[in-house]
Amino acid sequence: MNKSKSILEVIDGKQTEQGYFVNSDFLRLKDTGSYLLSKGFWSSNQNFNSLELYGEFNLKITCTRCLKKISRKIIVKKKYIIFNTTNEVIKYYKQERSRFDAVSIEEKLTLILLFEEELLFKTTNIYFHSNCSLPSKHIKEIKLRSEPDDENQTHKPFLSLKQKLHK
Ligand SMILES: [Zn+2]
Image (cartoon, rainbow, N blue to C red):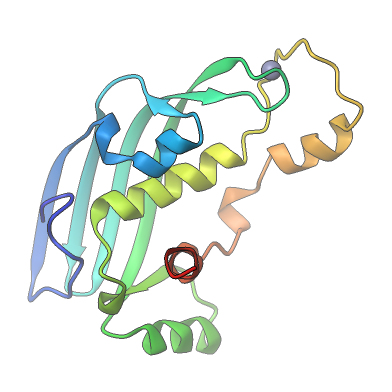
């Protein structure tokens, strides 16, 4: 699966691929002031409609308190179920205790979009760095928001991504 050209689809069997992302792949991330310090490794492991993604990214992120740049290594590890239609995705989320993120072929997603959405999600939740010297009167509030519990969060990026794209 080419990282940018191929749209996600259900395949007849198994397929493992890997490659690298560069800064020009992530334009929405760039808009937030974050960027890759080096090429970002990715791998995908698809088994029929089940897609596992892994990525390692060294990022520069802007601290939202002092606006200094901070370096973070971000690991992306996600499993998606691919459905044919967005209606099936909505059904999946409604029916079961949906363990994985679901995406649909209709959304015409690429690996770049999937990884970028994760990076946006993770970087916007890093509000400031641990050694930040700038005091903030809203520190308690920010602190709460700065430490998301990734594991327990039901994060359905592509329903919201879709809304964003069609705004
Ligand atoms: Zn700071």
